[in-house]
Image (cartoon, rainbow, N blue to C red):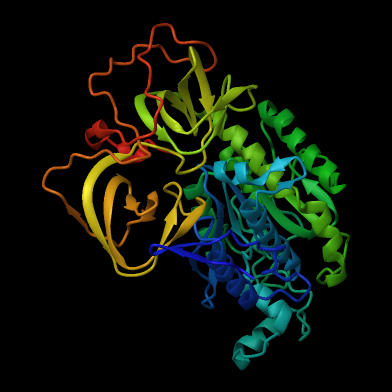
Length: 521
């Protein structure tokens, strides 16, 4: 039983227990329509953590769905079901999304990986079914298709109406032989449209491939994993540059340790055309193809194999996310900030960015931010400096506001300006006093304190003469000296800094700060 307490119009409720991840059921033939339903259910269950979009449609009208899990600027890209009969890779990727989201909300670790920290730092973009037409054909046959198309597909399938062995899309194109990576020299290619191995008349002939290539350019990921289903092996090399060999082999070896899969020895003249091949060639970054199951012949893996496959692969996504974050952070440059900002949660303080040792803890208050590198912020700490890596919404520049807003529906209250912040309760429809603003978020005064609400659809009515500074946000000393310290990652500043105030409050100077809405984390 959940007990609710109504105090002066404010509903306060305990945080619900979510139980185990339960949206995705991999113990079934996992179809395109099931995947669509589960994607929408996951986004509804985890707003702010999971979003999705369509990359476009196949010739037969099915969407290529892409799912974003996480909130960071660093990007990891995962995909599955390039080959139709390998649809268990879709089940695996959807199970990852479900389980990782649950671990985030429950603040649980997966092995040694802090899932919440990882997903605050990294966005995992998943295309769980690259070949929805082919998967549907492999699972359901030609039911519902025109006689002419059905006859054509049976011809591509060697005269058989049993499509369980089907790998291609419904044009008879093998999608993992369609990428422009040594396409001209692909070996063992079928000379005509077929259930497998037909590379087409030119690379990127299939719309699915053009969509995947365009999306990959847009994402600019640090690393990719393309899941396939047969062999329990890891491909990691495609004419890889000598400078990258050590890095990429180390990543592949780590995945081999997690999964027990064998690494494939690089070939001098590899046959190309695959997504991993193209990514390594084009981006010069780590790319893997992971074959998840024992050889199953010309057919799908049995459903009974999934639990073992999941046990071997459940840490692969978080490991790859950690690698992606490290690669991304190394590319970031130091930027001067020189602003007081409001820190809303306790934060560990480190001697530098990344995996530097912790040196203490910073309590919630206004802090003076000297510099940033990626999503790390260098702050004045004690008599020196330290680095913090705040979660989204917990370190922001708050603009002082004196206004009112009318709530026309029940409105959730948050402890800081982020959809995944702890909820403080619900306000019924009423007029509220607005004391601060950060992007589309409003700091409002209620009868028991100040809280944040999502003000996207609200209209502010500003007072004629704003005078108040909200409780829980720091007033900035307008005469504060200009920060003159040099930026450094680990050491103390070279000059003296004026002390930041130690109470919390809204910075009145920030309303004129250029780009203040983009400084926060």
